[in-house]
Length: 180
Image 1 (tube, rainbow, N blue to C red):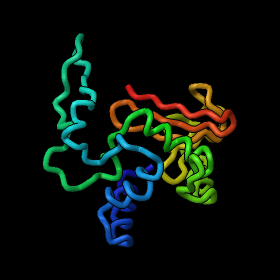
Image 2: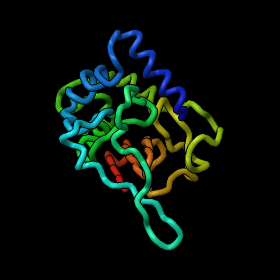
Image 3: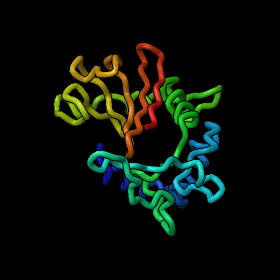
């Protein structure tokens, strides 16, 4: 996983499509999947739904000093600027688990899903545990030492800022979304 790689991919999408990254992704992914609560720039009327971020400060929790709304930002931050809900993320992960299709709508090809979710880092320690590798934007469990949370080998997923995690386990036909 590479934040700079994802940021660069976002810019490539803008150049090739001639459209802003956030507009392109909304049109090609979010709208067809029915992801109505997923944004790079959260509309003002939805900002009260964003969870407050706290940090552990010695013996107590205190509110983190974070600009949750990215006030005035123009850059969508493909590498970490997405806001979503468990329901919307479930739809994205279910589409990936289904090989690129959800409710009869093809979003990406099965070949693309297979390429994205295949381990491309070999035996390098590239994930959050020794048994994980990376595909294109997805961590992939490659052997038993990566099977925390009782996931199967081949499970792919992605973690985000502030303790978010989603995964799809093809062997079990299971999607999990954890937002803490």
